[in-house]
Length: 266
Image 1 (tube, rainbow, N blue to C red):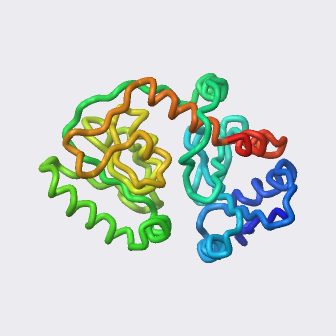
Image 2: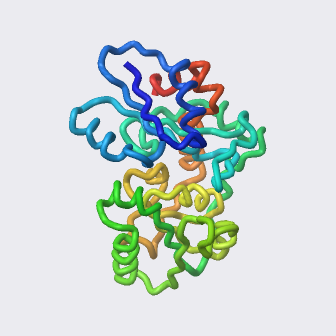
Image 3: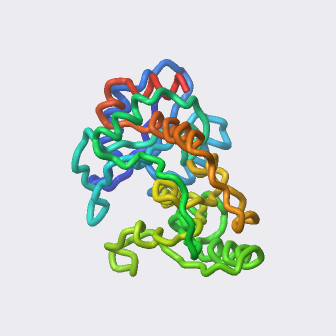
């Protein structure tokens, strides 16, 4: 039994995703299978309820390697063929699954989406990029400010490199309208919990340190080893990129059953 948890705001992208899920996801189980878009509304307590009851749940959100949507004042998809969404079983990010073929990664490259590993570069500063307050509370069980101060404190035990801070761009904050690529120039490493800034970093030659549930954790290193940096080999990075590409889908691929087939095969 498929249960899609609706967000009341009628502009929410879930209203475009859920009809595709209902059409393309095979409803073969008698037990409930829950789908959540983001962590807004009542999603957090409902997800915790699924965990407590040991019920299957899937998390749907923006993709990892994709054309970006407009987020504010309301979400807008500019090209449905180039906009991908991640669908994750029992978590916020993809962590496991088969590597998959090179085909899907090749399609992304043909669409002009940045998917190439370009090697690693050196730099001076560490860029600290926390997830949103909501995600941080859900994953780390502390506030965003507490997480930032905790990570800064630990970093000071292991390195004397300058630490720069970048929060998620939001209307009217100082990062709104800025490009993270500018702050990744001359960056030595990026540290985050769950932010997809980690994906931007590894695609722009910057090693990362992430939470164990982050999609980039397989290619990241430990905070205590920040001065040595973990820089996986090119082949390992390409295998990781193939895995990421095989765990995100367009709305059409969700609707026609491609997402269901690939994810269940994984």
